[in-house]
Structure formats: structure tokens, C-alpha cells
Length: 205
Length: 103
Image (tube, rainbow over all chains, first blue to last red; front, side, top):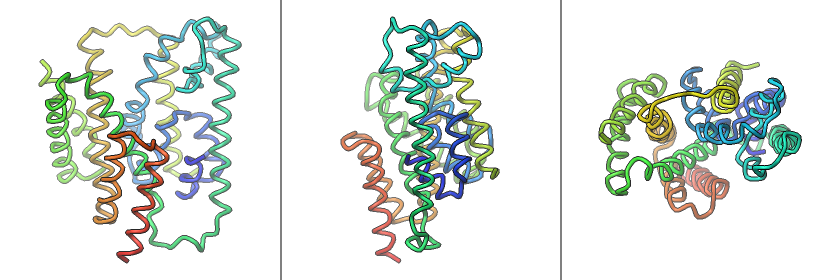
């Protein structure tokens, strides 16, 4: 629902929220895409960010392949509706019909709640909100929370010694900060990610 | 459809195809080093850049309120005490209250 509220605050129509929910069902990826797309980020920047945020689905999808139907369309739809909650609800011995039902219910709940949020956002009086109010801040806060949480959970996989890992992240952040000051917030992404990958990958070997 | 919504829709749809639909059909055979780089190193690199992007964007709009509110978000995310929604609500409250006080 929060996604719908934030999207409506960025002047997205309810049917845009519906379409993004149906075709771009990616949970936290949707929260990440909202401020980035409003800020003018391009397709590949968005793809890089949202695919990274949702990269956890790759192993999840690989381990649930056997639960999906054989027909290609049903298989694709079932894979598209995979989410953290569905994964947590399913059991290894669940058949395709049970799996599809679980995923469909959770998927529809997410999509319809987003549309409801967009509608609720329209109902709130606009006079309550000043013209210079930065309505995108909650989306930025969500994004930072997710980024920090992900870094916290992933840092151990790169570096067992926590202090060394934090130092490496600090180097990466310093490099990214330099690039964003030098190239600006749109064009720093690709060199920033490549530099960070090089720094993190290089220091491991 | 607005350009922003269209780009977001295209990127999010492509993301779902890449991370969920393709793995349901194709078995990728990357080496151990490639798997480590794609699956572990690159996501960390992206999230570090994402954090820098958010801080840069919000501090540019409102240095004091944005800086303090985002600092609160980062601390809450590290400790993980009140969750995503709680952390966001608290940071938004700090941001808007401080913003209106400083205005």
C-alpha cells in the first residue's frame, strides 16, 4: 500500500500503479525504482539497481523450479509471482496447483494494496501539503534502509573479519562519493558500480 | 503513461524476467569466480552506490533535516530494531518536523 501512496504522490495514475504491480512485481525493487525514475535515471541504471536488489530471487527461483507447472506460460507466470512470503509459505512437496494458488493470492494482495494506496493518497486533501514539501523523502528513506540492511547482511559473505569488511565498504563509499561529485547523480552509476566491484573483488584475491 | 512510469515498468519487468523467469527455464554454467562476482560482490557494490546516491540526493535538497533523518535511518537499519516501516515513519517524522522548524 505504501508503494501506491508514494507513487500517487509522484503523480502516477492508479492504472500505472496497477500495471507496475502486475508486470513489475518486485517488492523492494518497486520502491527503489520510484525515486530513481522520478529523478531521471535511465533504463539500464534502473535495471542494474532493481536486478541487484532482487538478485536474491535467482537462487530462490532455482531451488523451486521443480514445483512449477510444465507448460511454459504457466511456468513463467508462476516464476514471476515468486516472492519472499510465498517462498516462506511453500513446502518442498507442494504440487504446482498449490504453489500457483499461494503465489497468486500473495501477488494479488500486493498489487491491489498498491492500487488502494494510490486511491487513498488521492483522497487526502492536497491543501495539507505545501508546494515545497519533498514528498519523495519516505521513498529515499526506504531505499537507504534497504541498502544498509543489504550491506549489513552481505558484508559477511565478502569478508569474515567485520572491521576489514567495513573498511572496504568505506573505501567503496569514498570512491562512489568522488564519482557522484565528479560525474553527477545520473552518470556515476556504471563507473561507480564497476569501481566498487573491482575494489571489492580485487581485495579478496 | 508518464516517461518515469514507463521506464520503471520496463526495468522492473526486465528484472522479473532476469531474476525469476529465466532461472526457471535456463541453467547457467558460470565458474566459481563468476558466480561469486555476480552473486555476491556486484550486489554489495550496487548497494554501496545506492546509499551514496540517496544521501547525495537528499542532502542536496535539505542538508540538515535530510542528513539527520537519513543518519537515523542508517542507524536503525544497522540495529534492525523497528523494521522497515517503523524506521521510515520515524525518519519521515524527523525530516518533516525539522524541515518545518528550520523553515
